[in-house]
Amino acid sequence: MRVISRSMAIFILGIIGFFVFLSPSNTWAASKEYYISNVNIEAKVDDKGNMNIEETYKYNFTGKFNGIKRNIKTKGSDGVEDVKVSIVNNNKDEFINESNSENNNTFQLNKSSSEAEVKIFSQSQDEEKVFKIRYTLKNVVTSYSDLSELKWVFFENEDNVKIDNITVFLTLPNEITKEVTYGGEGPKRGELRNIDNKYIRLTLNDMEDNDIIGASVLFPSTWINTSKVLDKTYDEYSKEAKKDKTITTVVIASGISIAVLLITIPLYLSSKRRKKAIDKYREDYVFFNGNLYEDIPSDLTPALVSILVNGRIDINDFLATILYLSNKGIIKFEGNYSEDDYENISISIDENHSSAYLLDSEKYLINWLKGYMKNGKVKLSKLQKVSQNESFREEYSSWENIVDIDAENLNFYTNILGKQILTNEYEDERLKWRAFERYFTNLNDVDDLKDLNIWSRILPYAIALDIFEDVQDFIKEDSNYYDSYNPMYNYGFMYFYASSYHDNFNHNFSSSDSSSSTSNFSGGSGGGGFGGGGGSSAF
Image (cartoon, rainbow, N blue to C red; front, side, top):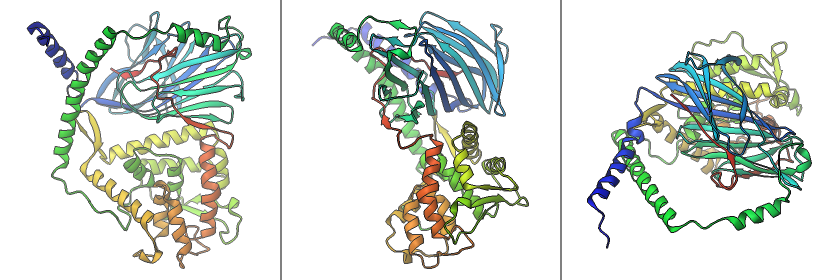
């Protein structure tokens, strides 16, 4: 057996110590941290093979920061140009100038042969801030004699930043036809969807270290007038590339194994320390440990319950909150619920309601709805239609962010060695909501309910917890459910809501229809001819 020399042993221990020093437990201070709650990337390929990109980042800062940076990998293109930067305030873009001064509200652009760094100087402290970066990538499409190909990584979490969700909207020069084939690149949990043949949408939640989001698209070569043209068919080129691929040598494999070992050992030790610290934090708290919980655990809004249980909200919570505010008497349903004319059901807002005890997300939603009202009312069918508009999506995104802020203001979270977790109090409540959810999925007889007069309270949470169908069945069984003056008790209204309005609203929000197709990402990491990449972080 070969004996490792003393100098080599010292070197290896030194490397391990270096990585341990860089582990999250040492690089994060409790008083200064950040995460990205949302990334939106709109990428439009034009008929010259260029790609115009608009990126929106929602940063959440705790402590003082000087700004953010975006590293744009340009491999696979002829470089980046026309870079513009803005900071969004009250849904309005405030453009800032390029400068090397490092003054507040300026940005630097540093280019090399393979990347472009956009460094935005924008002092931030204990706040959320929205940044937009616009730029054009030249010649990202490769044209063969029969097909054109785009293989692009739009974002890579190379800085291991906590990113709640990222969405890419990819538009081609023409509408998507049967001649177009496409796939998503990144973790298999990512989703890719053709939206009305207008664009391809890629979504990924909870980005992990070095996760990517990308796409591989083949479309007719006639769609591109000028780009990188190869005098071969796509299949001919692919076969040659495969033939030229060399086998990885034993030396390289050994080097990779050693590198992986040097990296994974400190990461494992760091993760183990963090888990131990979390267990220590939890150990003295008495948590709910029952299997079922027979009543609503608290008066949290449905959106906050979704944050608590699922870690995020969706469009269902918008609808659930409308019903929740109806329970409070702030929103009123108007219409003849004893008939089947549900399209004409409308909502109004009690202008005399007190907002003293409302959360910011509730106040925002009320004002949001008022914007759609005429003569103090808005039909549910109108909300269903306007949900397709870009302005509605922006309003929804703002509301989603305010719900996140409400959760933080209510002290949902604490930080343990750089990892954000629920506090003991809210972890206990999360367990109760899960048990409440199980109660309805396991309920066999409506007579088992302690209180038959609870449907109006339960319904908003049933929607948020995605157990509406279970609750709907019991509403029908309950002999006391019918009340023509209260839509909460009218099964006809609920049936319409479940079978039509609820589904259509969701579909409209996602801009999808029956022709849309959904698939998961490949599980790949962006190799094999992909261009692009690069991430974003704060400084």
